[in-house]
Image (cartoon, rainbow, N blue to C red; front, top):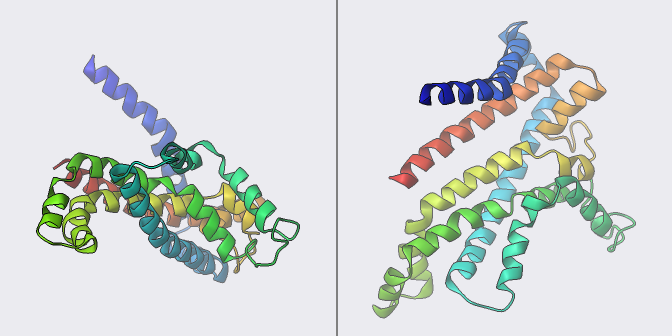
Length: 257
């Protein structure tokens, strides 16, 4: 029975995940490795990779700071509106990313509430805002349970010995939650690299200017009918995802240990 269930599960995953990925790899390298390198080193591809990594480099620190502050507040404090804050943190799980993009245009666009006073839409700030929103919950939801599990005994002992709140955080709290923070960071990176819906609305998708890797794949496959270029860009994304998956696996093992 167990063997049958395992076989069914592996077959299901194979059909949904492994077969499509294998086909992408086959299509990518059927003309040779040189053709793949040429496709992913065009100015548009290099710009897309650079922009995607830039967004990740901005979004991750912002979400780490917000996530730590929010997780500490939710786990260590009781205050009016705590339930509302919990709902806001989980909102990106329920709201479509496309709606996020439309909301940003309604607020920051030329006809929005700010009347386009600040150049946000169709530029890097707009893409960062959209990505920050869709990745908002990950650090919070990974760190908050850890904070509840470790309790406050060590922090109270440090305060009794004269440690300041800052010293307590750096020497007691942060080392205890570092694996949770790292896991949240990895999830944020993965989600940032794969974001498409919100960026489709707010980025503009101009090659070499506001086109991330996901938008490059879409543009090559749908607009340019360049299927090989789309497969090559997808392989780069897949490689980044594989690195993220390895990190997640290592962190999960360490967290269980």
